[in-house]
Amino acid sequence: MIARVFDAVNDPIMGMLVAKTKTKWGRFRPWIFSGTIINAFITYGLFAVPGWCTGKTLMVYFAVVYIFWGMSYTLMDIPYWSMIPALTNTSEDRENMSTIGRSCAGVGSALITVFTIIIVPRIGAALASGKGKGFQERVGFQWFALLIAVIFIVAEVICCINVKEKKLITTESPSVKEMFSALLNNDQAITVVVTIALVNTALYITSNLLIYFFKYDYGTKSWNDAYAIFNTFGGAIQILSMMLFLPLLRKKLSVLACFKTGLIMSICGYAVLLLMCFVGLSGNVYILLIPGFMVFAGNGILTVLTTLLLANTCDYGELKNGHREESVIFSMQTFVVKLASGVAAFVTGIGIDVIGLVGNNSTEGEIVKQSEGTLIGLRMIMTIFPILVLCIAFFFFFKKYILTEEKLLEIQEKLKRQA
Image (cartoon, rainbow, N blue to C red; front, side):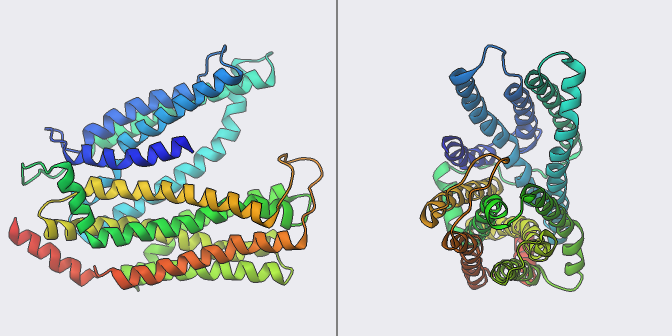
């Protein structure tokens, strides 16, 4: 919890630092490069634990290094996403960049999950043969982390070399007070940020409770396999929705219509899941993939479009306040996502206590049988609460957001005339 809170507070600070950066290499690339190098070393350090670190010493080591890991990742993550509105004024280009960026992020997350399971044991067995399984696993993770750190550096160096930032027209550097004032006066950025917080809160609540659902409500001894199938399917659909479904929708619908479609799909998915639970269809994982498809596909669409919508608010803010604040605005996106994660964890913990769920922590052994009231409560928290949150997001967003594609073109034309 301390790491999450500290990391979340760290994001707006990083946004301000990027906004005030002026170098011959631009505002973003120096931070991306330096943050990548530092984070790569710390990533390796997380898994290259000294042999004398055990027990409480190990926990202190991990806690300190993990907090530094979050800080160093923020160094490159905030400027990375902040570059999108700074690289192009064209809405179509921003949409393509957001789609590709978020899709590749999803692919990377999926690949690392698969390859870790495959590669770590093999590295450990090859480099520490004859040692205990636990020692082999430590060695495997250490060298795999080194491999990932090297790939990370190479990939971001390629990015820094090839990305060309636009030169800043103005040389005046706004104060910290002016930057936050500009953010608070950008009602469209605040609208998108609040919507992102609501959407992610709904998703995290469900993802936090899924393992309890499959373990105690799914109803078979193979719950672990079913849970893995559902999560794998969900990850694949989320990536497909970013790379395939959204581009297909965009051929027929506007950005706002696609955003509405994503919200409605997610809401309907939760409703179908709740219905299946109460009519006795929740014991078949392949049937559960139907609402899973709706929820994960909807979320994939929303993930890409929230990045695009936030990028578009930078133009609005520049016209309204006289200077651009890409980094400050995008730092708020990561801030609220982490905040949503914390809120979801809090709601999950309180909800489990309220419904009286009691069980074992092991994936093996006998599963503790829950009362009917507990299972009903679990289903309702996992579905009805997200539905309510998403409905609030729906009505709030479409009441407050005014940046249609026509309005954006009008704003961009005014900015060109001012330049």
